[in-house]
Image (tube, rainbow over all chains, first blue to last red; front, side, top):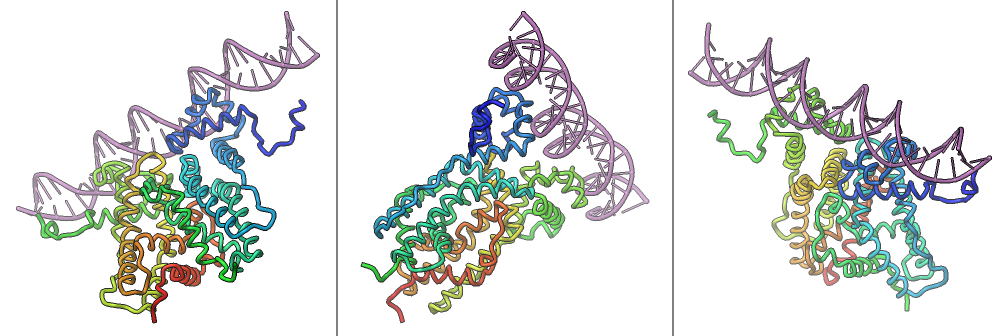
Length: 214
Length: 214
DNA sequence: CTCAATCAGTACCGTACGGTACGGTTCTGT
DNA sequence: ACAGAACCGTACCGTACGGTACTGATTGAG
């Protein structure tokens, strides 16, 4: 009944627990799900297995907590509220594209996606849904709104914004995400995120850019 | 020293062994890697565990054999040898797109990709490389040749054919592959493969289609 | 100082799986 | 018919892991 209880927070874990989750994430990134044993986590985090079970219920709860904790760190980019120029739109989209590539290629993202995919193969879709909804979904929704606004301002042809977003997504990532998940390495050209982002946005504007504009 | 030995074949497994691999694949599709225990395979296939180890060495060899066996079934589409019309090109591309979506969404493909991704998380990239090279790589190379030929015939703007292929790939699949791997389900619109394929090829032609043509 | 709660560390249990060994059976070539 | 190989079914072994129980140390409140 301490005053702590009344503090409102979206993160339902204590600092100590979050530190443990970060340790667990390190193990996951380093060695995959196989390396993520309760004993290893307890050793790495300097806590007892008993505490792990007390805090997270069971192993599945622990995995869910890892994903949840990491997803809670995702921050959607700021929205452009006022009107903006077509040039600004292009810059924003390029920024989005570069950011998307970097996030998707990061060791942490790959490890979490591999974990969720492993769970999905056993029929448990919970982790995957969390990942999609809380992770990529955030920035996706934000970018979709940006596209929608751009359409209203006449920078883009009118079309379902969600569809346009998906096209942009495909143009940016192509098959790189799955290839990375499979352990393949990107070519030198593919690692040049700035150029890749420019090309993707350029192609996107060819498809959705409004022709009737200054 | 039977006459069988002299028969040339790319499939290094006997019929019996292939039947076992098919049984193993069924288990994999049904329950993921976790369900793919040597005991379960032996029970399902009606063979002994000892035979499994005799034929495939160890469990990893068995997994590799499953992927290899399935990849050997992939047949690249026939090449268009002579000149062809732009309309034919579009039809071929739509056919490719539909086929790609169907293959990628199939339970077997998803199970194999999940398996390889699980291995990749432990640092073993072998399965992933096999999957990329022997599976998708085949039809990819074939389609890339098609695009290259179309460029030479003036149906498409001149560009690196491989780059164009990747753009087409991204336009067709977008983020659906990863979402399926994560256990997400496609929307009704996304399940309409014919429409999706048409839209993707249409967008692709807007980007790469030659303007200076009849 | 004392009591209660928390937690690290360790030991322990049951189970499941990879891999091996062996007896009995079927198939094959001679 | 016979010998030998291949093979099925089962039992078995060692190990690793998920989960639980216990002990002792630390901490904070009254």
